[in-house]
Amino acid sequence: MAVQMPNVKLTKRAVEGQMPGPKDIILWDTELKGFGCKITPAGRRVYFLYYRANGGTQRRPNIGVHGQITAEIARKIAREWLADIAMGGDPSRERKTLRKAPTMAEFCDRFLREHSDAHNKEGTRYNYERLIERFILPTLGGRKVREIARADIHALHQRHRDTPYQANRLLGLLSKMFNLAEAWGYRPDHSNPTLHVKKFKESKRERFLSPDELGRLSDVLNELERTSKEMPSVIAAIRLLIATGARMSEILTLRWDWVNLDRRRLELPDSKTGAKFIHLNGLAMEILSGIDRDPENPHVISGGKSGQHLVNLQKPWRRIRKLANLENVRIHDLRHSFASTAAGLGQDLNMIGKLLGHTQAQTTHRYAHLADDPVRDASERIGDALAEAMKKRQPSDPSPQKS
Image (cartoon, rainbow, N blue to C red):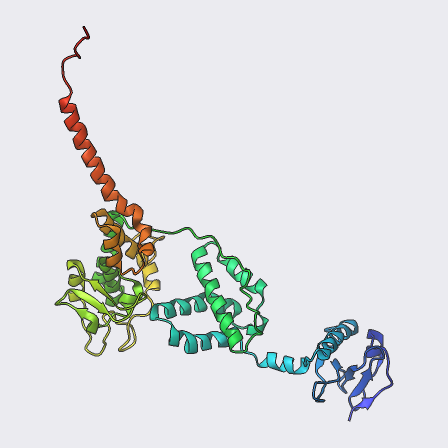
C-alpha cells in the first residue's frame, strides 16, 4: 500500500524534494482535489488524477511523468479533465479507447476489404489501392485514425499540388474514408478532417497522340516484343487500348468468354457505365488473334499469378513511354487519341460517344472542338472551290465605261 504524505501544493521543489521510500509515496495537491503525484521506490515521479466517473467507478489515470511535464502543466490538464468529468465525460476510458483505436494502416486495410471490395468496381478498387499505397500509408499509416486533423489533410493535399487532378482524387478518397470512420465508430460524428480543405483548380487535360507519336510508340512495342523485355500481356494490353479506345480496367479484366469474334465485339457484362459492347475493328481483331490463350486462365491479359489478370499496367507504361519519348502521356490519353482519330475521320459527337461507351452526352462534349475539325476542313474546301469558280467568271476586259 502506498504511503500517504501530508497535502502540499505540488511544485517542482515539492515534488523533487520528496525522497523515495521502500513503497510508493503519494503527494496530494492542496489546490486541486484529486490531483496528486506518485513517487516510486525507483524515484520515478508520475502525476495523476483521482476521480469517480458517472456511476461511481473510481479512476486514477496518469497525466504524465515529472521531467517530461511540469507540475503546472499537469495541474492544468487535471483541471481540463475535471471539467470534462463534470459534463459527463470519462478521460480514463477515452484514453483507453484511443490506445485501442486503429491506425490509418489498419483502417485502410479494413476499408479496402470490407467497403471497396464489396461496393466498388475493379477499376475504382485499383485506383483506391494505388492512392492508399503511394500517398496515404507513407505519410499517415502509423497515425491513429482519431488523431488525424485538418492540418494533416491540408499538408498532404498541398504536397501534391503540382498534380492537382491526382491531389483532388486523393482528397475525395480521404473524405469518403473518414465518413466511414465515423460510421464505424473510429471518430466522433461530424469530425471529418477533410472538411473545408479546398480542392485545387483542375484544367481539363486532353492529350492526343499525333501520328508520329503513335508511330514511335508502336516501334517501341515492336522492339520490346522482339527482345522479350516486357511481358507479352503488357504489350497486348497497350495495343488493345490504342485500337479500341477502351478504358484500362475494361482491357485488364477482359475475359475470353466476353470476346465474340463472330460478331466482332467485346461483350462486357459490367463496366464503369454498366453492360456494354466494344466493337472490334480489323486492328483489334489482329491483336486479339496474336495473343496466346492460356487454357488455365480465363483472362485475355494474363498476369504474373496463375489464373489472374494483369493488375499493374502503370509501372510498365512508365518504362515504355520513356523509351518512346512520351513522358507526359498517360494511359488514359490512348482513349483520347482514339476519339481524336475518329473525329479527324469525320465522325460526329454522337458516334464518338457510342464508340467510347458514353451514357451521357456531356461526357462526349469534351471532343466537340475535334468534331468541328472535319467540318471546318470541308467548309474550307467548299470555299476554295467557290472562290475558284468565281475567279473564272470575272471578265478579263476592263469594265465598260459609263456613257
